[in-house]
Length: 455
Ligand SMILES: *Cc1c(COP(=O)(O)O)cnc(C)c1O
Figure 1 (spheres, helix red, strand yellow):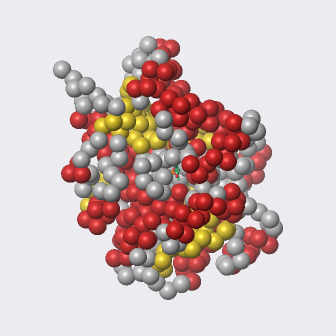
Figure 2 (cartoon, protein in one colour):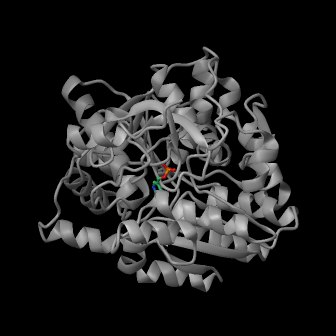
Figure 3 (cartoon, rainbow, N blue to C red):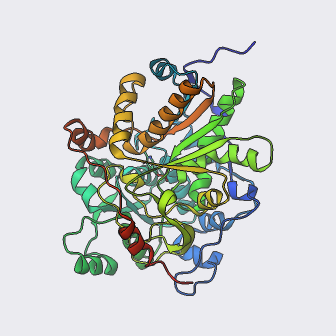
């Protein structure tokens, strides 16, 4: 007989993964390599190592090792907040009156409030191990900056964060959390970098963007001795570290003989989704199982559903390598969407390739629909979700309702990437009926895509 499934499936410390899973090693058709922004040739390890720490540069280029050991010091930190629980959403199932079984992996149970800490810890660890003094980075809504600030505090590294100006102004408490952990926080665009000054000249009064903050952080790392740049999503190394999400989820499901049919995650740069699906997609690529994978993106930043699969810059200032990915163009500045973490013009090359190969689906959702799902979920399941996470909740609910219509008993797994305590300004807008839905027009997208680099 099947064991009764608890509301929360906890794993113990010994079940914490010992190795990350490198999804690219399982892919039959590998994602295209990063190209150097000037020479337009594949980035060598040495070129990568000018921007990233050596070990991370190595991970970035590795598409053959299926598993990479997690250093002991990283596992020790992970143990303070992992394994994260896999929750059976019994209350939600009941409320929806659906035959579907719904599970979610909750990554909001650490101070940074999201899954970003999973990659911040190894990134800071490798920087320290290399004897660096500090790191620079960008942050949009603030989760990544907070995670890296925490990691740098733990490993005693300096941390300089460029925070997208609108968020810096809208989320003063986020900024103070980062400063509590010792980080320096600069609103971007700033006058401290050449690229920031140039953007300010061209667009006075701009609220900034992730692409712009990335350029500033890279420039700063390059200009300081003993510093490297670190990025919280999009890169292969980040997907690799985030595979702990999927590995733990799979262990927990396997324990109860459960198998997911549909796996859903929100997609910004693609790191949590890439991490969540990693072991499941690997199994599918090996021909051992079959799943439906759904990437959920905001209608205001519809990278997969309306973008183009092409080489593009990862940042506005065009100092970062070119990546082959679904993109809206590196100059695309999405209209105000409150899911700051999903406002990125591209999607990691691994997921872009999988989508292009027909192995993953994508869905774009409007923000008012997302917030109504967020509020519903908060009232039923108790957790106050981040707006980004609520994109996945929206589609999980829609799929569960589809099961109700068809009577099918599918098992749905989705990623609940974080909590929304710093997003109450957005919730306020929603409650006051002042939230609007935005979608870029075809003309806007065409104009932005016309700027793609010609190779
Ligand atoms: C950053 C963030 C995301 C989106 O980033 P991905 O790299 O696509 O995972 C989603 N949810 C939360 C809570 C975040 O902080």
